[in-house]
Image 1 (spheres, rainbow, N blue to C red):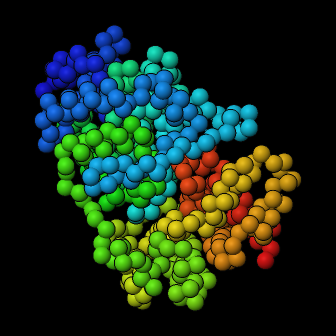
Image 2 (cartoon, rainbow, N blue to C red):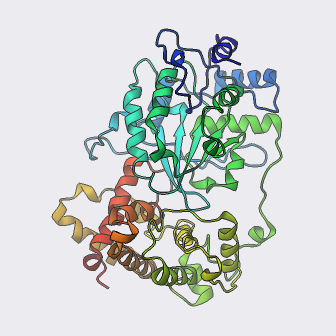
Image 3 (tube, one colour):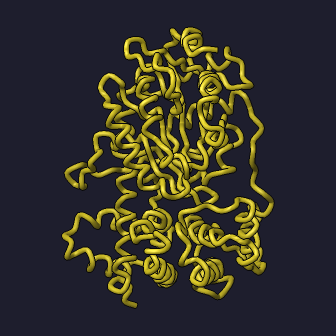
Length: 478
């Protein structure tokens, strides 16, 4: 089946969808005269096209934002992800991050693109890999938007994370004729993302894929590497992501939430997860993950949780010379087994796992899954606004925050972890983990907002983590 045939078959649709992976071989695809129309057909593999069309029409009439409204919603922040219930309802617990105006913040080099929130970083997945989210519905009108700037911004963002294992989540819903990039741009983007960007990409989740995406993928599959093809996963319903990601930390735009909720209500898919009897009964007294530091201290008598202590001590002895430590993921099954052992109070021997990346991932996971961030929700705003102070005042402010604003137990655990990271930095000539590399890895796991952060705020969080690492002896005075 030729590309021309597919273009002919799917032309003439008002709404469109496209995938971000395109071929580089057919020169006719790059012709700028007649851009093939990519149909926005929300028909899933198991769903009737008629029912999908009715659902699409209903959403168009009542719940979707037009391009101008969406630009207003996304500018300066991102949507808070909501919970999807078994009935397909959306818990209205989302809130937009209230961004600061450009005159109050240091304006980013890519503010003209960044303000739409098209790309977000959503912490780590269940296996310790960085999660980067691309939301098609946040793309503004293609009549005014500079897609070359978007390409530069995507590369600028990925450059911070491509040296470590990472995953991409692509929300396809909302891509249509009025905001889609040209096919020639997609081909250019594919060429721009060379092996540097692909080698550590561990998974690409295509959420709400259309039939056209699946057909287009099959057409170009012979040209794309088989190894890359294995990384692509179709996700028909948002709840499926919980098997791989911390769903409550994921950036999900409101239009995507609404669309998914409509699909769940209309088609009643088998709900892929339910709360276990253990979760309903509450955490075990030996629980380490997903509880508070206070809970662990009350039940164990230790300020420093055993999983933190054992992970750090093992890494001190066995991983300071390991290149890329904290940048690599570990076996999902092994991680799950070790977490379960810790939660049940069973002994853990990291030597038995045969992988030094297991304790490294567990340390990050423990911090990220705390009920409250170790730097606390209250400190998120002061941390993200620290850069507004004169450089000679920043040290004094950080000292004050740690001394006066942090709970004592949080301070002790944070100091213990940061002190260990200075040992990792001391071997950076071997392990390649510079202070900035460690800050990027650990920053999002130290503090996050109750709502949804944007990339600019994340940069400030990372810079604060860098401050703690580089000036450890000056900021931790007790």
